[in-house]
Image (tube, rainbow, N blue to C red; front, side, top):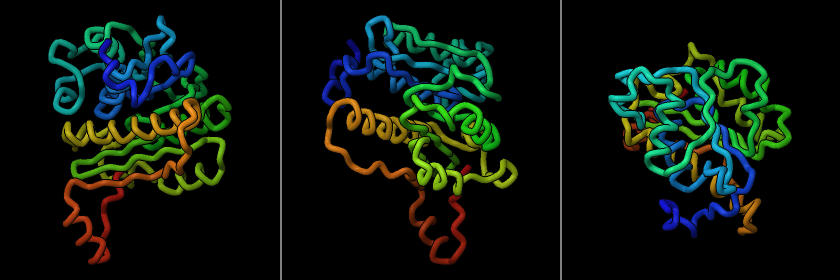
Amino acid sequence: MIYNSQLKLMNPKNFGNKSISLVGVGATGSNIALTLAQLGWGDSNNGQGILKLFDGDIVEEHNLANQCFYPHDIGKPKVEAMNDIIKRKCNFSVQTFNKMVVAEDKDVQSTYVFLLTDTMKSRKEIFENCLKYSFNTDMVIETRMGLRGGRIYAFNPHISEEVEAWKKTLCTDEEADVSLCGTSQSIVVTAIYIASIACSKMIQHFNQKYCNQPEVKIWNEFIFTLYPESFFLRMFMGNETLLIA
């Protein structure tokens, strides 16, 4: 099977009935979905976890540059196109929800939830309405991407200090420098890098909690830039502008 070479990283036999929700299947979400599926996550017929994809958008031509879709997917709902890619690559299907999550929606509640929607407003609403009191959710992971870098946040929704630390990073959509999902200003390598860091946060937590690996602190904020010299120069000049949302 495709994930046999990765058993030392994460063994699909340990997934059981645990679930992952990806709210948004764009630049970051499509890469995360494929990465998780290649790890074996979502092969529910073999007891290897549940993978749920949420998105109400269709694939458009401009999505091909930094998302996992193909030209023949244009016009298809993103969740259906992503499921087809996973079936061809991994030989199993995942759960798809062709809708935008805008209000209280218990379908979103999972062991791990990735918040990957287009706006900051929708992320705040989904957290408040769907996840704030979701006692079965171990971790919420949120990513932000721009042309030159990005941020990844991972926090336990039941620990008030972690939630408050995350909320302090939020801004309005008017204050955001670029699109959250990177549809307007991002390149594919940035999306893949963010997806890999986001998945590693989840893998580290899963192995600690469910596979008895030594526990270490999972820092809830990871910031990177593709142009470190420029970033540190701006900090030195007192004009740090990497806040990407």
